[in-house]
Length: 281
Image (cartoon, rainbow, N blue to C red; front, side):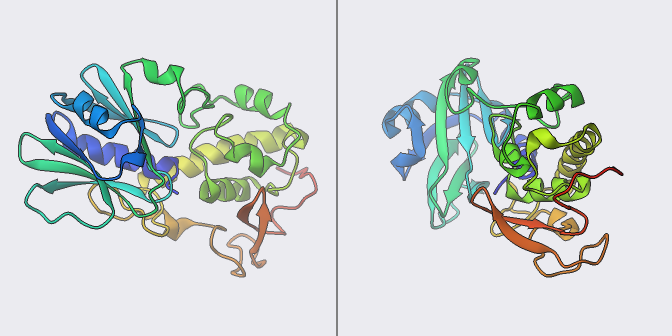
């Protein structure tokens, strides 16, 4: 958390809040957030005088596009951005502040302190970590059924583990993998290369529909997530299995089960998501 829908929502709100703003200074209060360059003062110096052109997303990463530079920001578990007037009190756990010439500030707050920031020359960000080896964008035209099938056919691992791997499909985390697998009627422990063509098609369709609906709802506000304007998402009200242990499945009434798959807490319906291959997808 946050996953693709939440990061996409943050991207959209930041475009409304900071597009065109001119950076006059940067304050780094927690240097370890800054990964490239590996010096907080150099980071601040590189950004001074630049203007934010737009904000884009790659997987779970924000790409803050400046004139000639790109700031790649990963929110990790609890990172968030907010726009403030400079006279407003600075809240606890605020680690990076971008000062603009209009008297406003973009502040990055991160209670868990796991977030990261990297600066690259424009276009170079895809040639280096953390964006170097990312997989398909599930809401992009490149994520075709054929490409998805070709990717799964060589994977003997459990399907949930495959979908969580950002080298294969980006943006999916624990919440949306559980939700997509339930919609497709696929048990999270099924081997990826053992899915039938019908199941693969159903899963491909459910990944896209789940993420699309979540984006439209502004993401899921599990724990502390809010968008760049401090607003909570609404998709948590539509969750079918995630976080619903022992509650009845909306499709069949069977109690939702929670287990551990690939080291992650995993929710599924034992009736709708049998370990046996479905023949009626």
